[in-house]
Image (tube, rainbow, N blue to C red; front, side, top):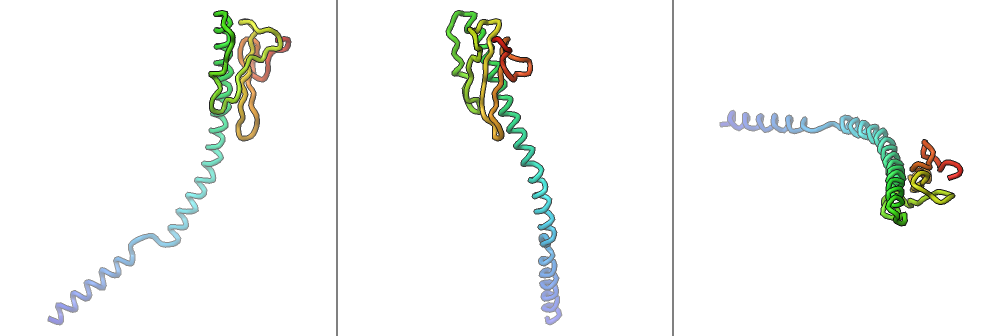
Length: 138
């Protein structure tokens, strides 16, 4: 009988020892936290750059769409209205010609703001090829 009780006690002691060995050590947890911190430090600047590029592309697209819309409205004898292109990161879209625009020389300016700078882009037959301004004399 005492032998049987001793075996039961020995089994309980062995099971307690194996329970203590389960889980992660403090050093393993610290290493994981350091690795996650390094990954976050790399990912946040990349994410911000992607966001800025998306904002810039939205403004460029609004300028191009505005030029197409302006030419179409002029060709149909309508008054040019570009207010439907203003949304999100695009703050304003307007015809930027210094002279009276025609379908051959219209220049549309779209503006918005990114986190670092104000962005203005120009599009249409009267815009520079790099979308930085209207052609002179337009």
